[in-house]
Image 1 (spheres, rainbow, N blue to C red):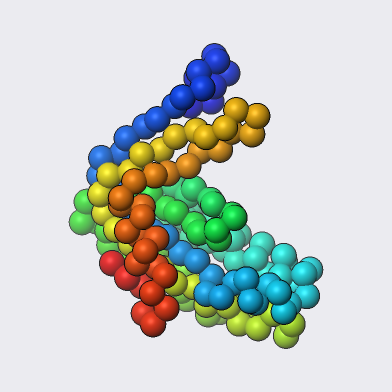
Image 2: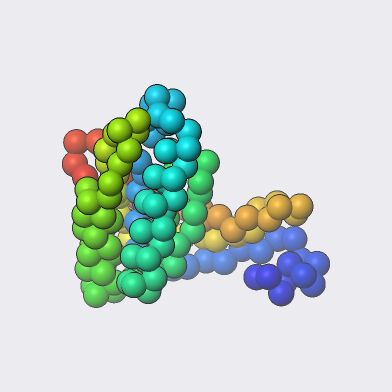
Amino acid sequence: ILSSLRAGSRVLVEKFSDVVVLCADVVGFSALAAAADTADCILTLNRLFSTFDALTDKMGVHKVRRVLTHIHTHIHTRGLAQVKQMLDLAREMLAAVDSLPYPDTLGKMQIRIGLHVGAVYGGVIGVKYPRYSLFGTTLRLAQGLQVRWFVRVYV
């Protein structure tokens, strides 16, 4: 994709037919951040995201970050072993969030996770500051599943 951008191409779209998508968000993040010390919030989010980065590296999962919505999307080629791997990743993410130290000004964070299997499209959006983003029904379903607050992992 980078070589295509450097060559002048502006529209880049890829279809991934069979992937497992995992979406996670921090429950009530806006309210937590509004009441917390800003430095504590930034340091805690960095610790949390760094932990997730280490987990995705350990599991061999590709991560696409959408910071504005605090959603982390992970893709892996589909198969029963990959679905199990993504469920294991979800469990490890939940355990990591539970075990992290949190400053008193912020309080303990919780995350919600949604998983779905299917096709997604990836593409570069923008010219001046291009970003690689994912689109499609599978992604929307995984995001929709993760917003259910009363269960921690939806599949």
